[in-house]
Image (cartoon, rainbow, N blue to C red; front, side, top):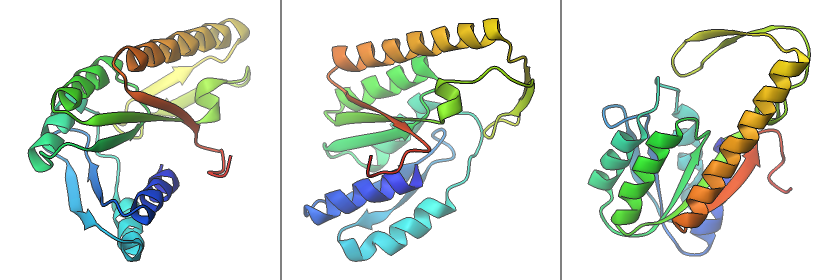
Length: 178
């Protein structure tokens, strides 16, 4: 997500647009940095992106509210997220759209999140909450998971299409050039 954010900022700054970085899991733990106005600001932006740390679960409606409180003028908003909380994302997106923003969602997933393989059982730890989950990766579990992910992606794409929100899926292992 850091490389993607930096590349998108480079494109915007090269076109003469300014860039604002707003990161936050909820309204109480959001971080907003200065406005980045030229390509000379990319080093500072990279430092700010690298300073971001997971801070717990996501409350996107609250994060959207905090964002709207700090940037009231209308403009393009790029949301880069794993979109794991669809109802929360939808509520936050609705707030941003009602405020007149042009919204684009960039959905970042790891390849294993899209297409896990049958194999040894896993013990997963959530980077945001620390919650632990044991997973059995047998054929039926992997098949059911893939079906669920496909359905989830269809829900996200249908929502975005219905609300005229740009949507793109980015795999975390793909080079930006692809």
